[in-house]
Amino acid sequence: MLYLDTKNHNHLESQETTKNINSFFSKTRNYDAIAIFKEISSNKEYKTNQLINKDSSAYKKFTVDLADKLKVPAELVNNTVLFLLGMISEEQLVKDEQFSKPGLKKLFEVIDINSPIKDKLGIVLDHENCKVKLENNGLNPEWATKYLDEIACLNQFKIFYQIIGLRNSTPLGKEFHNIAEIEKDGKKYLAIRVNGKFRPIRAIMQNFGFDIMDQNIFNKKSQKEWIYSGTKGLTEKTNQIEPVCTLPPPAKKKLIDLGLTFHKNISEERKKELTCVLQVVTHPRIGYSSNLLKNSSTVLGSHCGLRLVLQDGTTYSTGLKAKGSGFPITEAHIMDIDWEEFRTHEGSLTTTIAIDPKQADAALKYINDSKNTAFDMHAFSSNCVSFGTRGLKKIDVNVNFKMSLTQSIWNALPSRKDLFSYIPGLNPISDRIVWLKDAVTPNFVKKGFSLVGSLALYISKKLYDLIPFSYPIDHSSAMINWMLEQKSTFVAPYNEPELSILPLKDNKEFSEKKIAEWKELYKDYAIN
Image (tube, rainbow, N blue to C red):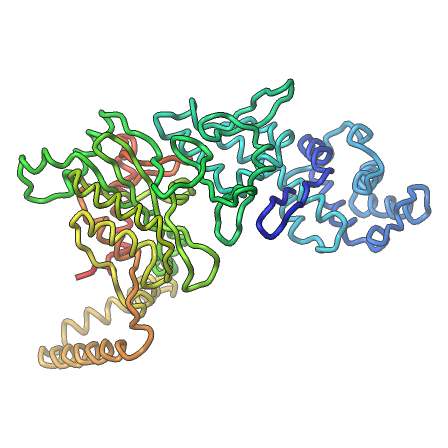
């Protein structure tokens, strides 16, 4: 496993055993080894190194008893123990595929933290996770063995998916944004773009670190922050936001046509002036399929980001990045590329608004001003939704997404119908009681109950003002409710890391289905 330099750690090297173990486990298949590993990890003699002498009576008794207990060949147990003790190499192991990758993660979780196997299995899991990640993103899975440390570096720097996402969805694509194997001085290296040119990741590891608290890449020599840019690759951060790409004219025209549908009763003359676009982007994550719990997902909130497309097609993607972990208050900064764009999601919800160049300049100035100002981020009153709301205000779209914490918690509770559906026979009884009440209760009684209910609601709302739970929140669920009501809103599915700037015809059915589903889920978050 690789431990990268940070401002708090000067020099921690990768473990030397990685290559041999990776190579061995990449060839294994059989589940028997899982049981053997588990038994060995809990064996007292193994922990105290009493099994070092393979000719000892303790060693022979252990392997024979274990083979008999697990009903596996004694040779398998023998070689497993010797391999874990580092006494034989991969080449000396039996040729048959007697080991398995499935189940290693589960085994890793149950093994005693002090077990000598823990570190080795950790390396194996790193390798397997890396291999899957490479394969899923169209890269050579063999790099997991050759370049495990390099891939770990990209992961810790939080740029692996940025590179893949920009490769998948920008005009520069594979020609520029890629992770590539290059040859230099007769040796092969894994490389990415640094200021436009491919540079070995090994060199990046030597010259750069990652600050865990600030969540940024820094140059060890200058201590200045670096970012991964859509036009340069890894580059030094400036006081101006970096574009992610330049949209070609046909794509930009389609985007403007979509953005025009946001406006109501707009003149033809005004339409001609709207040659730029602002997009509001979020990714609702429901989390629960159960009707009883799905409402609770809405109270947790979703990230809000902005995309801006200028008249010449220059495109930006940005959002707030929290610094540190001081919940509910911390420091925040503006990202040059919003990380949320490339995370897995259930659907990328985007509202497109056509704007004029003057509004676009105001939005860009707001983003750049925000980039150069570190400000306090509050989970409730100054969060990423606040950033998006102020961005909308710059283009003359004045919306308010505030609601009380009490109302938010109330909305997270299951409905009567969903709650009763978990008690057999209760919903039909409840429906009959409601019907009977409506059918036989005199009107003056109904009005009396209605008056009492209204009075109770009024009093409760006044009480909310006197307690902390009335605290107004810039709530993403209120923003989502608003977005779902706009004609220029679409939902893109997650197929791979990418910027879903334009809706695709193939995704129309998916988009309509998601919008209908989310409208029902977020219906109680409408802001009057």
